[in-house]
Length: 314
Image (cartoon, rainbow, N blue to C red):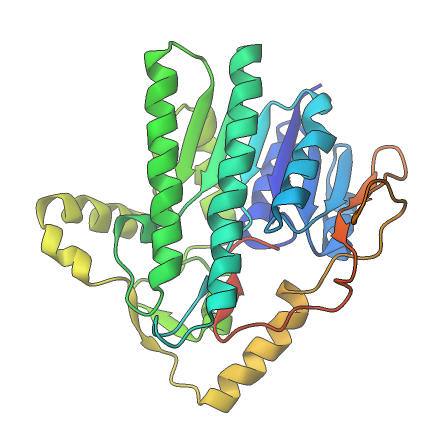
């Protein structure tokens, strides 16, 4: 039975990728922090779904996630969970930036390494890492976010070349969309020079490119042109797609961010059962099994930093 793991599956690109994989016949393991959204998605899909509520920014939870699913004979791993932070580098929250690095880089690195090892030994498998067109550019006012996406892009390209040299059939692909119509822009309080693509279109191109064996997928003609132009005119990289703030007052943005914090930064629900110090996890049901990974004492939502927004679904 074909199975796929999708992180950040509760909204945006991750949710749409999950729908497309289910349409291709894949049973799914859906991971994010917002369990209720995952269960709603699972109820809509035509294939069997396992729901795991986990905060993969925590290294231990990330490792436990993979250990919980590695016996499932995975064929596809989609590393989609991630978020951005808008503001001047000197002013943004160091705590939130480190959390972003843990989510956008460390979790992707861990899950990619573990999956590639297993897939290479098995002789088949696909890994899709959601990077961004930000990976091609420096990003004033979103410096750390852009840097994390460059890491994901270059890591994926390097692994792909290693697999090619080894003659491995395992495929890894980096998805590099430009602006996408999700919660990201509103919450971060930014405008982009390019209109956003729909999450559905980005997901279609991502899944199609992954199974076609492409190394990098850049959805949209405008974003492809910008990426190509950078190779011929490197100085144009000084201008990221960000134009300015949305023009909202600080109070307006704070209201948007407060509303989004409840959606994006909400913790997982209490665990079903426990095992091991500090981490609780369990499973219920048959085709819609649920699992939670939680550290004790983290029962309250973390406050959202200014401009914190998820591109997939945390």
